[in-house]
Image (cartoon, rainbow, N blue to C red; front, side, top):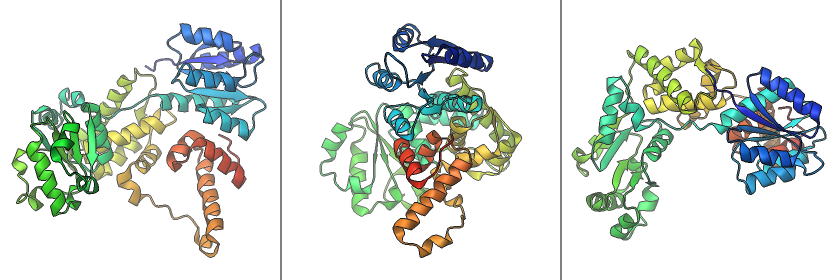
Length: 413
């Protein structure tokens, strides 16, 4: 069962406060009401279970932007704050987002709009961290349980086999106090291995893209490896291929604990589906069931046919992406397709063939502006919120508002 989220509504107009509260109560939320900034401050101080704040901009004693700045800076609130206004402009929205507002809703308030923004805010405020060692320890699947034994084995050297480096680094970071990533360019600058290791004492060092290392970099690596136990430093090798054959003459891999996160195969459909459902339950429990999600058969069919999902870390990342960005309660095929767009391993598979041939005959600056317009319009037409568009495009929301205004595009989300 989904745990109710609590919304604080701050608005000096009684009718708006109460009508909005009635709507949200009917939708399963709990609410607190405040008529002004002073009442809001008292409630925030008294109540520890406020999840989201709806804040009107125009209030007589203290305007919403001023209160927003106070709550975000002085009181350091982490809850999403959604601004409301009947006289808002793009400049007002820019100022609000610049000062930490999650989103901006225009009055009169649309029920569909407010529920969508609240759902986005709840998803955004929830953190879905990568799987932990405890997850593997408590798993009934033998291969997953065996991973936990290797992960907790007292060794200083690890070689990980996974297609999902970002997820691996998140996994390692969640299970180690300090994690450092270094590549060939960094290792070439190390002139004193003892000083380097002293600085990294009791930590884990990831040697990235190891297959790119030249002879000099490998020599320095071997010195670091030989001294790692002395400084209680764990060594992890990360690369795109299995190095055990290529480098066995140069590195003694017998000391390494080799972990393969690709635990499923073509004949393991039932295990794969069970693991996906267990991962979903694990993450929902972790956030105290504040949201509810379930898999549609179309999503399960997609992961069955995706060989990348044989890797448990990749499967987990896809599910976490869906939890973060799926707006409804059912995770389906479309959510899977959106989730893989956020996974670097799949970027080469998602190139879209939009009709942009006409851009090649334009001046570069004009072509850039035209492409920006096509790009942004595509996402807005597909009901992507400003929050999600900011993540997808890598552009801060304040700049997005300016860009939309500059290109004559209207954001209705």
